Image 1 (cartoon, rainbow, N blue to C red):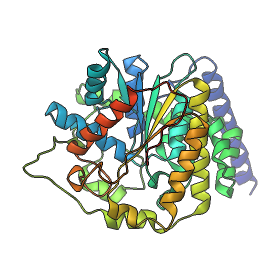
Image 2 (spheres, one colour):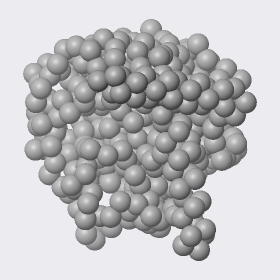
Image 3 (cartoon, one colour):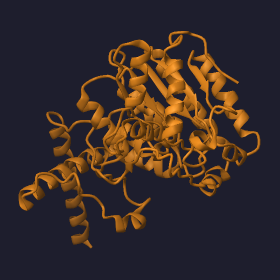
Length: 387
């Protein structure tokens, strides 16, 4: 028994020595705040943004609905397959804005599949300082971004966690969750420096391992190495995101062979469990997003994204009207523009790849409407809502 206790005391002592050593090391060295142990969608986009060393004129935000606008729109416009891992701008929107204003525009997309309002707030509050900020944020929103029944809590998303790791620790308090496990995690982070910096250490470990493998295997890099496709279905949801070039390719729209997928079963599931607390939390984050942009002097153009009528029909009764009223009220309060593109006659079924995502044709139609809005009275202080 005495031997077990001595071993335990020695182990605790050794742990504190190592923890103190790592803490001391951080006083003169620490990795970039944008390192990551896994190639998540948000890390890939932020890495690209950082490498460009240029603040975009127009920042695009939103979920996969906006991703389809960016990727499918450019694939169709450029007549080229787009690799979603590397494609983080809208060449077609830049082309339209240049035509209308006869000057160059730089766009950048930080849209991420499944992006919630809390993620949009985490992005703008973390990445852009008062002196280095986009002139305009174009943020595509839809009801799912506020009510998704597959969503756990703000701090559960890859984007939110990445922005916390990037230094925005205030997001931990903003998430507002006081469950036992969250409190335990925050306590461990304060008590144990190694645990607090675990994501940094994991990223450094991955980089070192890659360098060793490059030397041992005589390879130039391991960018193409990723989890085998055969294991993706098995590990999905259990491991962090890991993307590689060539896995997510978007082809130009082919009018001779249009494709439409009925994804209503998926969205019935996403809409099935309406939790008022989740909705109110996301509306609160949406207000924080608007307030943050307003305080930084960033123009905001909100796009109420087009949906097929059958998708709107499966929303909980009265929710769409409540959602539109809430975002309209808040956009007016913070002098943001709201462009309602989910109106009868603007888009038809031929513009959609499924019940929520536009195809290349619909993407171009949407971006033409956005470009018109951006070039007409962009600096107006009043909110523009079309009904």
